[in-house]
Amino acid sequence: MRKQTTKRRGFTLIELMVVLAILGLLFALVGPNIFKQQAGAKIKVAQIQIKQLEQSLELFNNNEKKYPTALKELVEKKTIAGSSVPQDPWGQDYVYEATYSDDGDRVIGYNLFSMGPDRRKDTADDIGNKRNAKKDTDQP
Image (cartoon, rainbow, N blue to C red):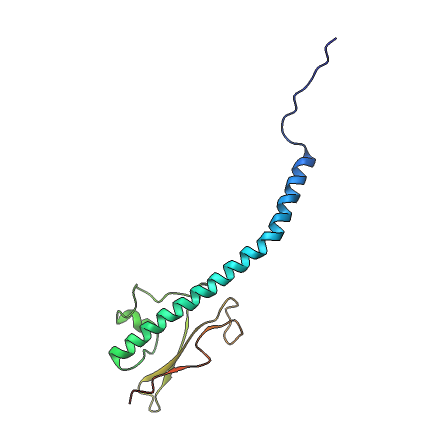
């Protein structure tokens, strides 16, 4: 009498569960580091975009002898490339607060910042120059 042997194909449930447990453990160890890097990259992007917007604002000021009342004027006067002002990495508009001259006639300074990851104004994660407003003191 011959003994029947069956060929084993595939994995057992226990083997699959062990593999999933190992993958879960690896993700638990590596995952947080990946997300930290991603958050740091978004902050860097926001800082770079703010610097570029500040350069565009200075160019606008040199040409017009005043700062714009809103960022969209940078697009209208072709001081910034593209058809719109970029949004921050969290999908929000950059906050631009104009400072007007005493007579209210022209903009002499500004605050420019991103509300950051929490998307709320005046919190610790805001990114930009809002705490030290840029003022045009050389102009009459």
